[in-house]
Length: 373
Image 1 (cartoon, one colour):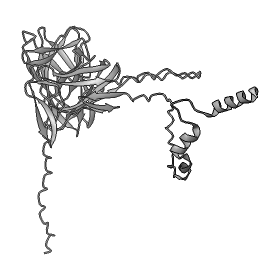
Image 2 (cartoon, rainbow, N blue to C red):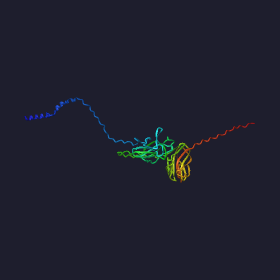
Image 3 (tube, rainbow, N blue to C red):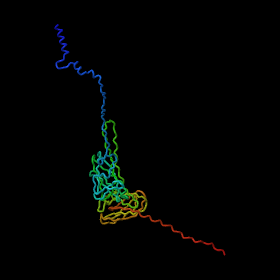
Image 4 (cartoon, rainbow, N blue to C red):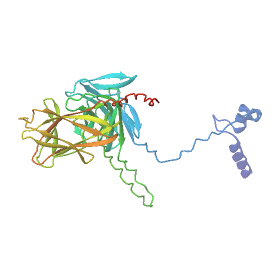
């Protein structure tokens, strides 16, 4: 009996909740969970996030930046995008902007160029100058290896090209086009081209990649002056010279000979049509002597230059020459012991003489047969 009652007491303890709590049956009754089975459940959809795939970052092509504009390859520079200008002015020709040097004294125009990497770049320009022009191209204050000399053009609307090679640093560069020896010009076109290719990023491939051959720097052609009826080749626009130095003088640039042996300077002409021309040369010589003119290596004419008394006192000397159509390289060559300075060249076509008319034959008289008696 005792054991039975004890077991009943334990069963009652399992079914009676503790004070202050609800039994499972009471909780189910209050919530009425049986009705939840009839409630419609919302449709759940699963959205998959896109898979993130790691990939190497793309490498931007090498670009030049002019102002805020990024450009690549051969870069045309807007003529009116200059960052500084002095003794020049912006004008328009045929609706296009051009920069004209209004004064040859210290005239310049500057452009700010941002290069993607350090290297060698070619600066190419087109300009017009009826008297010929000399341009010094500088990058960050350092001049190019050689200046640009252009021959005289027919007019301010006729342009010729020139090029200079510069070393640009990675980042911003200031390129200055500066007038030389009081020459005046109008600049209508400016482009910049990289001549050295930046190295590609290191490759993780085990295959050996051959190193590309360097791009050779183009050698600028000798300036050529167009000769129709008259031409004034710019003194600084020579093609070759030995024992001569270009210097600024009181009246403009001159070629100054530095030796009495083997001095020469050459100028190239493109003769449109054959003819006879007068070759006028402004020369000075302290000692006097003979200056020979060669045409494409062949003797053409010569000058007997007397002493002018000073290397800065020039006289004008003239000779008539015959030139065929095409290219002609005229070499001013000093004879042994002769030292001279050359200041100006003018070539003028002589008028073609009118052909002499053939004489009109005298009329023949009518010869009558003798009369018969």
